[in-house]
Image 1: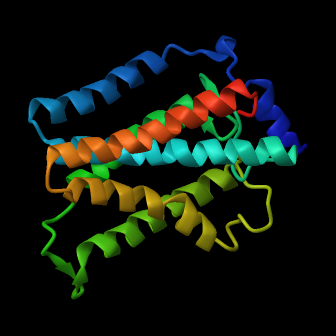
Image 2: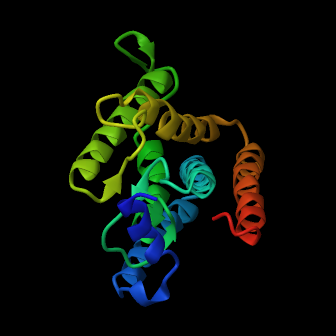
Amino acid sequence: MTDNAREALEILRDASQFQWYVIPLLLLVIYIYAVEIERRNWNVLFAGIALWGMDWFNEIWNALVFHFTDRAPVWGASGPTAYQILIGLNIEICFMFAVMGIAAAKMLPPRETRIFGLPNRPVLIAVNSAAAVGVEVLLNKAGVLTWEWSWWQPSFPVLIWLIGYVPFFAACFFVHDLPTVRAKALTVGAILGVDAVAILGFGAAGWL
């Protein structure tokens, strides 16, 4: 087991790490979603939840990689945190992804708008994913986001871009553009349902 993985494991779901700043952060996230509910902006609301749910899916399989290799997760959250939820997910990251989808969806232009002559959705998926990878590289250099597998490194960011973020923004925009609220709710429900089953099943097995 790597030193970084051991450090994260030592504080995994340790309530003694709690810091009071979690409460105002939680209220800010609730407020952001409440605004979209108040405006009945279901496109943005469900798009935000979709991206958040996709992050949970990634965090679950990342934790499984750590469990079965007993070496390191694909990415690990290291350093101070108010609560370490999974080996690569702390409460601060969780709140960040809860807001990221809302922000991305609110900046979407109409579907017919083209960027450099190309459909805007694929372009924005690629650009947003690349920007997110850029932030991750900075976090990695700061030592708070650890990458300890040779194929998941700043020198080869393609997998980080393709696996780490493209599905997030693709799901976010797909849900945003679904024609009915019912379709959006069913899709988001399916994403969160898979997450919940995985957390309950793998958690009960002691794999998370």
